[in-house]
Image (cartoon, rainbow over all chains, first blue to last red; front, side, top):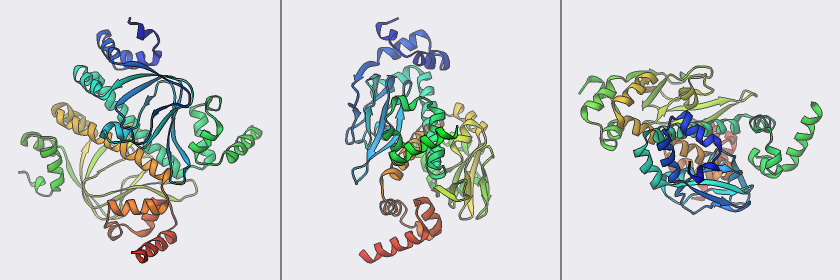
Length: 200
Length: 200
């Protein structure tokens, strides 16, 4: 096992070796093209106008994707936690400048691979292509679900969904970020949390 | 050329034969597993609770995907026009009951293929798999863009984007549907249209 492999989130190994049946050689080949990158809290992995040229596995830490509207307000689109992949999806695909900020909320450890190397490895390891098709399908599905949620659920329902999916989110993400993600005022979120706590 | 091929939107042929380089045999093989289906205006291709077991090419007509919130309001997620593919993405993928209504806004003509036959053809025609990966990537990207738009643009900006992309949309889609898609009241949309027409 290479030095790099020791630090890798066990979920990464599970994903490729167990779920997508990579041989040890294929797994090592993939790892050999990935590089560790550290991003300090509040630093950026990507900013609008930059082209997203890499795919990054979030080995440790959490991030937020956000955009800024023309009134200067940050609008958080989603958070990413350990075992997610970071980037600006559209920019990665089109190689045109992106629109998202991707910022570290905690100190982050990434495993990064360039788009060119990933494409080359997809040819050498067909199972990698299979995984990526699966991942993109899940992303498309998740985005559509989220669009549905934004259109149909009340803030309270969206809040309850969020803490069901991420029970410890308030221990890692500042309240004002969660409020932005839910598209409500921080004061409303505080009141809602208090009310829900009293109801229990 | 088979009888069925005569009625097919030229964009369908262009997509597979020109852009994805299907041989005439591969193209005929694909078509041989697709069936015409007609849906009258206001009828449904899918309803919530149903499992989406087919992929459908919209050969003619237009449809809307919508969900109903718990207050009974219809919320339009998107429209589909000629040369789009219909379905409930998540349900097709997971084969669990879906959440979307897919309803014909005009009389529609579809080219339908079952998930099983599509999977079988993907193995026989690797270029079909390539196309599908491309398509899913574009869908994921489009959903994320739309989520960004919902979070950052004003109703006026979203309206201007919509008519830029679909200049003739008001000739085909009722105003109240467009208002629902833009998430504004029909009266506000009418006023906005009037104001913008006066400014020109």
